[in-house]
Image 1 (spheres, rainbow, N blue to C red):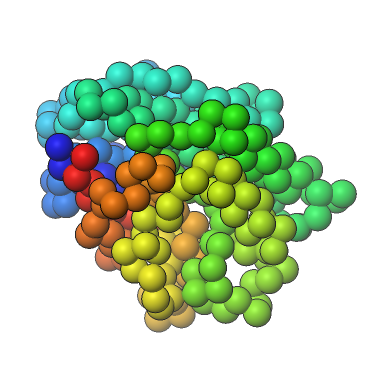
Image 2 (cartoon, rainbow, N blue to C red):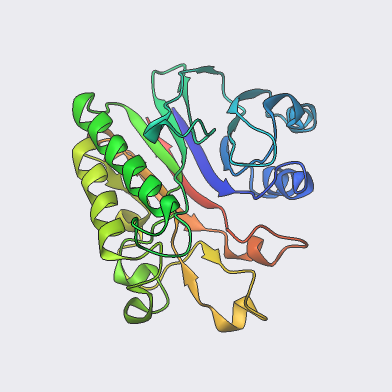
Length: 262
């Protein structure tokens, strides 16, 4: 069984329904995982996506914030969700394919502006969320699993435009990188994108604040695809669709792709 999977923080699935449709039509991934849908599940435009061949959806939503969805051309069933850090947010959903592969779609908290939990509650929530992810992976080690999503951390020095300048900026601080690394290690996860593209600067997010995001190119790799240890030889063809960041009224994230042979 071969399939291509994409993950994309869409920053409102209803506002950017047309961009989702464009991606499905032009790139044709078999599975598309969306984060920050900002919509109750019943208001996600699933009929429009079904008309393009994506008749299967598993999602968790809430009005105006967060939200995760898995759209698929392949049959899948709901495999539950986790409420890490007791936030009550729609930040995780899992789906199971017919071959038993489980896809976890995550939207990790961004963490606010100040990397200090003593003065910034949101940063503390982010660290707690990652800690509980670590504990869950350690207690029930993933098998035949793929994890994707906006993890809101750029872990490597070449995952950001300037390692030195971002060391004290939320998303690249040493404590965040350590927490993400601990979660990855606890689950025996492989970073698919970097296994396929091991060298060079690589970004999936560019701020809306940049006057010309493309020319400035001050990006970060916040969006990830991981695979459990038993599937570490089953992927190829990783890429980031940078061009989507330049589409009309875009998300500030670009879609990340990988193909799996299972």
